[in-house]
Length: 73
Image (cartoon, rainbow, N blue to C red; front, side):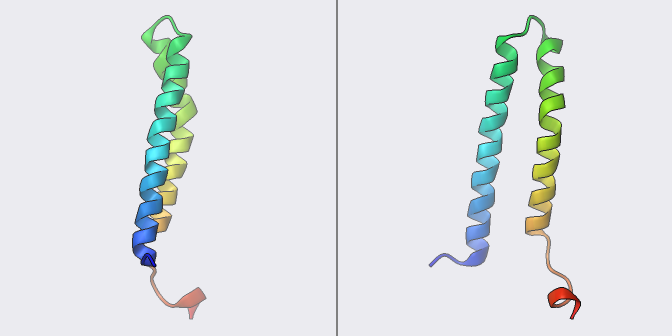
């Protein structure tokens, strides 16, 4: 059986890999229909920034140490 911390790291690594692959696919989709750099970069950042921010918060929540007891005990 895999230790819980090792399983969490594996899941976070897989999620990070999926985010990178998804970001590349979104960039390719924007780039295929654009005529200039600003037609590619601006919509890409606008589309992906909330996803990256949410992923950052998820990583923070998954990796932060637990302080105190269970449910405020």
